[in-house]
Length: 117
Image (cartoon, rainbow, N blue to C red; front, side, top):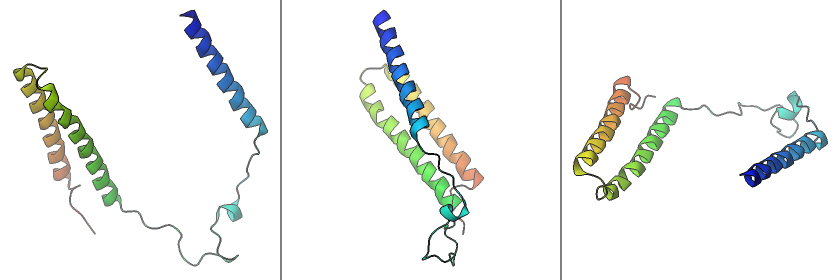
């Protein structure tokens, strides 16, 4: 236990010293309007450099990721069926699927699944 504590303290000290050295050695960059503006052959930009962001696309992408992760959780449940009692497994699956369906119903009722222009 003492060996682990000493190793942890040594690692923290080395990390702290390296962070302090990097802070002292690095140059501070002063940003101004000219440096942060886009460069177009020395002229001011003629159009807006940022494209409009679609919030609806972002919400659908987040929903896709959530349901994709849920599929990854559901797939190993088939393998756990052999290890668990059938009643416990069915209760777990029903609760999990009900949470998913209630979440989908909630998103649907809020209108987040409809693509608006």
